[in-house]
Length: 150
Image 1 (cartoon, rainbow, N blue to C red):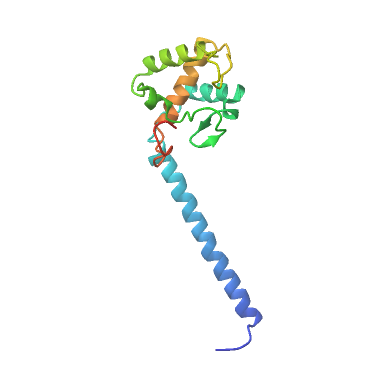
Image 2 (cartoon, rainbow, N blue to C red):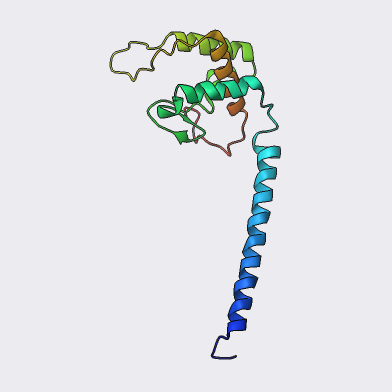
């Protein structure tokens, strides 16, 4: 073996290594796209109501207190699996009723507890948030959160 690395050898190593890692990157990107479309969301329908719920979530900055799928603040509970915790994941109408009752009961006024503000959401906004949280509840999160309580 030569003791000196020539320019052509260095160039070949550079191009070969670059091509190898570019192909790895493209392969991982294609796999990530396939996984998101076919596995993680379980082909859950992304409706206008779900998108509206995400808009309400962003408009009222819910992420400043809550986390969803592990993203956000930890001042208030994780909401990615809240419909499972409430036992209404298979009944959208019951989910709406529970969410409406919860939102209208805030703030609870219990001394010493963290309080959620009253956002005075309309029934349509509550339904959209409910649909959004039902949608996120269907995402395969690879066992996140690590416990049912969020």
